[in-house]
Length: 640
Image (cartoon, rainbow, N blue to C red; front, side):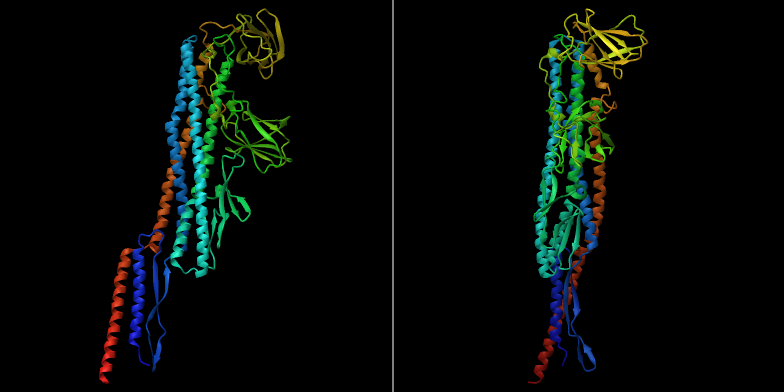
């Protein structure tokens, strides 16, 4: 058998043509996102023995492979997840930072304007025009806090909508990946185009959450989301969903479902864009909303209490300027019950001391063995509470009321004492004469030793048993600190009753008159409160104006405006940190991307060189065919 030059040449032409085809496809897809460079592997055909020697019979293309490095691809996915999370966090935080810088500036400005208006009332306490202006400033302050809360609520809604949109896209990708797996199982994973599409979808999926890829023997790939949820298993796709939040329905949670089974997904383990959105909502927006509520409670309680210490232009004890802090419209959303609870207990929260509030949220839990436990979600501090009747009193400034109890073993609740207050803050005073600019005149008896002083905390003329504030009326207290007792007298010297001093505090007339005692007298001492209204009396308005610089909030560490400013500074700090994370994550991602491109990307210079090489190979093989044809023609001519 002779050497078949024509057949050898034909194999060379076919192999070169295949190489040219692969190279041309690489060049054509140089700018195609997700395309992996391909290479054709050539092999020698089986040789033939002629005499004592073996002669080659040509070549063929044994395989066309993608240039793909699974380790580099995994590194790229991890980098993509981190960068997406960092970019999402920075985008949301920078928007919120701008919101606080622009729209948020009206909150401290309106508070300062209201204090300025109170100063004006103190200057001219009987001027109705100035009083009307002060009420307008109070109303504008309440509106500015309402509007800021509305902006935060919109931010929460937008974030929830984004979470829902991302889960919808994840479901679309999971279905596509399941279909691709089915195709790959049919072709045993040899279709490079489908493999490229699969990798592109997995890389996109890694933007939304952390992705773990598990290759299967069938050529398919199973996908785990966040290291805990099997999103795609072979040709079966799981569905992600959003359901009402627990315990607060307006804070949706994410679920995963397959067949008739649904499980809750821990967003803290997801990473990527989805994890960043949950972090932004739960760790930034909701705390900011709670702190704004803390400010609203501080404003309402501070000025309502100051009103209760003074006398208005009608000669009555001052009434509330703002809605009461424990009004149902101010207390909406303070307590949430988890769906896993077995009892029907419903909780409500009553604010006792605004100054002790921190703006934090708490987890209340009950077990038969451990009793009632209250955990501060911000600091992690845990305290034990004792049930007294239907009340649980905490040291954090609030009392929890239990209805439809008892609470069952294992039940949990989330407590947000300041939630809802910013939306519920409203000015309820309409009569400018109602501003209690005047204050009762306190006169110690000349026989007092001077070692004891008292201060009025509040009085309530509307309560049953209060002696009243008629013109010329007064109340005199004879205080015996040694016996811890007191006796009250009216202006005619008639006894109004006796009582006990508790912790240096007097709550007279059914808690309608609250007094604090400082110092200890050896003998009983006497103090007289003149409750008669006097023209030009501005003592209570002066005390109100001074509150702008008094540290009333956060256990005496902050002023009213500092509560808001601290939130603003915290958001600014978070934004700066997020910007740094973006730079770092982008650098890591770019490094991983460059590595993938160096291996799997198309290098046009290299492909151009290959194109020339395979073109020359093709031409050489074609020349062999021409030579073989010439030899064949010569042989035919020689035998004619």
